[in-house]
Image (cartoon, protein in one colour):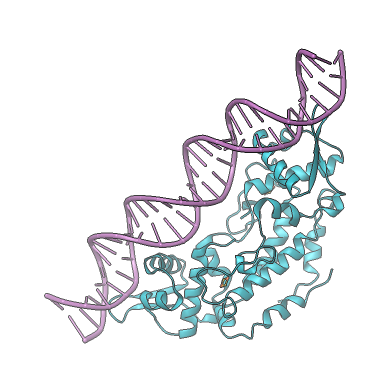
Length: 150
Length: 150
DNA sequence: CCAATTCCTACCGGGCTGATAGAGATTATG
DNA sequence: CATAATCTCTATCAGCCCGGTAGGAATTGG
Ligand code: FES
Ligand code: FES
């Protein structure tokens, strides 16, 4: 389960991708129905991660730091929810041996964790903001079925 | 991130699959280094889900309810951590429209959620306890690469 | 100067996580 | 039958995280 915060972040990013221009927090919050003060923190987090930039003062606001085609879902999720992996031992952005598994190398469940992480990040790094906003919703499922067997 | 509890559950189930015989909680806890009283609750949960059965009294213990080949990682994870999907709107075991997304059908992030869920459950329902315990750890990664492109 | 905006930090209630505790039910064995 | 080993049930707990609120400080256009 990804956090509410992450969904808010995605929605905000997608809003910016659609608008293709700077927008104030108030505007984003109103359009996507996100608590305004909460969104502030989220935008700050995305800014810290380098995904968006901002300008202050009247006429200020937030805008994407790079083209919507270059910003992936994976990037947004990582900067809000942290690593995508299901366990620390399966993350390569924040690897850490699982406490309470005797040995990482002999662990019987880690292969599964690695497999899940691999497929997940493959998918998530393949979806950009641009792809998500301008898309007949069938595309994703087709793409997925391409490799399907078993 | 899956919970510690879920990892404990998997480890316990794998222990039973290896042993292929009934085992007491104390024995499982000792071998897999799981807090004993905590494991009690976990086993009860797995029993409630129909994955394991039990017998009381001395010589009692837990044993798998069916052949290790028929018990999937997905089943174990579901009975401990709940749905595998990243959001309620993407779960088909526990579907529920996401609060705070205006419309489920027009949601721009749901297609991604569905794609992730599909690949994840495909993987997780394909791995049985039997497969996990008797496996040259390379197999999984090979299987994955079979469909890979882009 | 003024107003609109971002930036920063603190706070808070409620629920979940990872346990621990202890008493009760069941059953093999002497 | 008594005993001991096991599962079963329910309650409790501390600590953390999640979702959200609050208030002010800094910046900047008009
Ligand atoms: S080492 Fe991470 S789950 Fe076993
Ligand atoms: S509806 Fe579930 S994320 Fe938008």
